[in-house]
Image (cartoon, rainbow, N blue to C red; front, side, top):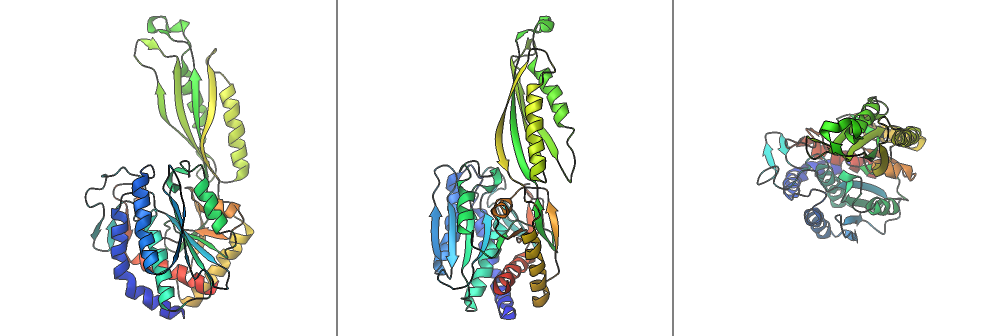
Length: 381
């Protein structure tokens, strides 16, 4: 059956290229709930046209998370596909229209990250339905605040996705990935705000003051030692302190962004941050530290190793290019699903470059390739 499904994907590719463009023309930065919901509704309209079941997880601040189900009453073990519809740039950053097609590429907000992956998953489902596939339910989850680690929903969207996918044989997350790879590990993210208090005086008597900017500088240097691409990294940014050049300020704050590979490394980071906050380099300064956000890491697990092996066999059976498991340095919802014990790999989306820039682009032919991979796994896992 796989060849029939693949041929159907190829026959639908031009139609779904138009869908891809129209979907990405709906600008949806995470903080713009109206845009995120409008983007989701665009895909929901397509799902309803196909006769698929739609359920909303309503949110007051973030966009609504959506669960779309094909073959809800089928007997087989479900499979899940997922991608996020929120993007990163303010509305208008890409011009009007936001998306353009040039040669073999499509440019625009989220064409790779992650709207292209969402469209590829819908293409896979449409082809399977057109070919009469009814062996198992297919769940497609549209995430709404992934780009900021689901802060705006207080992690409710991720919890909803995990509940919907808890019995699935596989969770295919559709972030972009390089050809011939699937992501089996990802770094986690911890962000902290350091708030430092000192004593303000006139700069002519700076020796009488307690300068929190100086204290922040010492702490930043201590944090910036973490630069291991394969382990812990730290980037300090968004510094605020002082008002005028002739005053020693009374406060200073900065943001620290940690990336880590294992939960043991996260524990180490938490202790290091607490110890650093308690230590004063400038006598009399006082520091408090607050966790701003967190996203757990996606650790390599035996069940995901087994999943990758099974997928490699399916790709060989269906003539798809061989893949290997790789380590991703950015966070994603795949980590949360893996932590819940759901067999999960990431990188099932389209291939492109310049992600999170105004020149983000994807290769058009990667849409059909991504859809074929997800369809094959649905058929044979």
